[in-house]
Image (tube, rainbow, N blue to C red; front, side, top):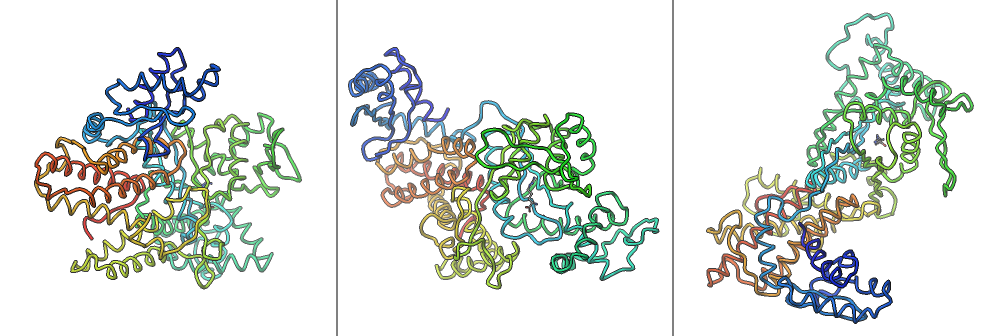
Amino acid sequence: MILLDELSEIVGDAFAGEGLDRAYGAVRPADRPDLAQFQCNGALAAAKAQKQNPRALGEKIAASLASHPAFREAGVAGPGFINLTLTDEFLNQKLTALSADEQLGGWRKAAKEKVVMDYGGPNVAKPLHVGHLRAAIIGESLKRVFRFAGDDVIGDVHLGDWGLPMGQLITELQREQPTLPYFDEAFEGPYPDEPPMTLEDLERLYPIASAACKADPQRAEEARQATAALQAGRAGYRALWSHFVATSRAAIEREYADLGVTFDLWKGEADAAPLVDDMAAELRAQGIVETSDGAEIIRVAVEGDKKKIPPLILFKSDGSVLYGTTDLATIVDRKQSLDPDRMLYVVDQRQALHFEQVFRAADRADLFPAERLEHIGFGTMNGKDGKPFKTREGGVLKLRELIDMVTDRARARLSEGGLAAGYSEDETADVARKVGVAALKFADLSNPRISDYVFDLDRFMSFEGKTGPYLLYARVRIRSVLDKAGDVAADGAGAIAIATPEERDLALALLAFGPAIREAHEKRAPHVLCDHAFLLAQAFSKFYAACRIADEENAAVRTSRLTLATVVGRQLDLTLGLLGIEAPQRM
Ligand code: ARG
């Protein structure tokens, strides 16, 4: 059980002893750490409900707690806040249990759920851009947090592989290589196994096609028709499309892997396509599909809506399907093939309306209950001009270029700081990549996800303050302290006996891990774990500055401190791991 819950039970018992609801006993970290470690505000509410004097009630409760072995002090402050401070013995006991726990005091859900996590969402043939960065980073971290808390998570990349860009590409390639068999309707196959184009071709052709379609309605119509033919199953187009998907996917997979992002499923919009017709028939039979201007729609607005929620368009008047249709059919697919308890969509907040429509339609159609479909939205990464980040030339920055950029900057920073000096070229490159990616990921994850943030590489890359590099450096320093000591059990199994204020604060920081996991899970908020990692590293710094560790003379104290340092290192590793951040062994 996590410490806060245990304390809440103890204080809840005291309230119950006065004939009051035990829920009043909820304990939280003190607002004034200079006065106490924890506090309970329940006496105020309880007294109000009972028409009693809050201070008098608080004092009664505090008096009954004072004799409990957990507390060194239980007193009342102000109008009736109960302030609590634990005994060192109690903290030692909790720390010992924490260090023996595989999850180092982490939190586990009582009942696990099967969760589909839809994140990444890159599009075939378009290079990954920074817009897909946040989905990948946040989704990867949430997947890890959910798994750590006990849920069964299936991560699905949900490739964008089925829309108009596919028709644009097909028709553009036809212009360049008109004699390919894929365009010959009379060709009976088999089609070649080797792709007729490279990744570079795709990245070159797509912008040309998309610009041409914008400029020329006739060209756009051609692309639209090719898209419809692809979706209707024209063999040559399907064969060509498979090459687009395979080539693109290989590149996307590599770039995500460099960021430490992986998926269990590489499904896409196209996988839902075969389910669309049956689904539509079912929805029509339910009577929830209406015709409007030749299109088929599902109305999803309800009374009391604060803003207008337009209907979901199931089929356009030309019969083609849109993003909402494939998302609905994907829900059907996931329900049939995985039967999950919940589906989470880690996608840009600017798509909030789309998901509202899809979720309401899924609910109306009895495909899946809306309260178990969640859009986990996030803000944008902006440039210093406050607009979504672009390169100096004004284009979207490719993920590949971004990774190179942070790696180069990290390398420069390392050499300025005299770090990683004398390492082999391979190791230097590895450390630079890890520091660069950590800087980027930590900067991204440490903001509440809904907030926008400004891309500021100098700030992200600093070794001081709340940054990725600071945390990696803190981790490496703990390791070097332990290496110097040499003899402590690697699992930190020595007896812990804290005695100084810095050790006490460090103990409390370690014990805050459980509540941090719980909050990160409940709010789907990785930034809570960033806060935890930072507070833990800071508490360690203060401990390191104030207390002798490896060179402490008293053997028992030395063992206790080395054990503490070991546990901090392990918990920091765990936390960084949950953020999807890899730390070098040394730097
Ligand atoms: N491919 C989409 C985009 O680039 C994101 C897909 C998100 N997931 C979903 N199920 N709609 O905007």
